[in-house]
Length: 164
Figure (tube, rainbow, N blue to C red):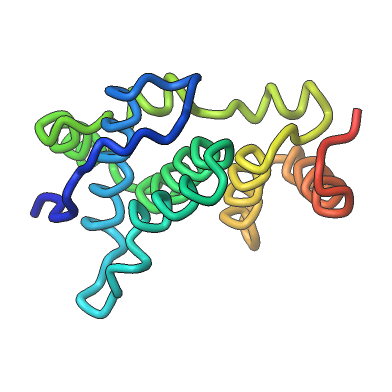
């Protein structure tokens, strides 16, 4: 089942991402939502592309962060899929002219090592990414750096921004 949302190449004033790539990212977000999250009861107003368009109209600088954060959140849903299913997902995304999961992670994925080395969370997107990792680790036998990530989350939440 493919995405039903109409893809409108909305110019989001994202100078760092070309319009053609923005469209592929929007398709990725819509595909993930429509295939893994959406229910028949989900109102159209909560469709991530509609939320993104409203965000873009209100605060264009926040739009790229909202787009990438939304994709990160949706991809966390499929993180535990077996490798064969993830390869199939990549093929379906490519066939729908969306950015594949593997391409997205290679180009836009945030490295935990980079955050740990830096010693702070730099922006809201990194915060959401780290929060997803920590939330998924709750109650599991996890690497020791999860405690460090939790303290970075706490510091970011207290200040609303990074600290050197």
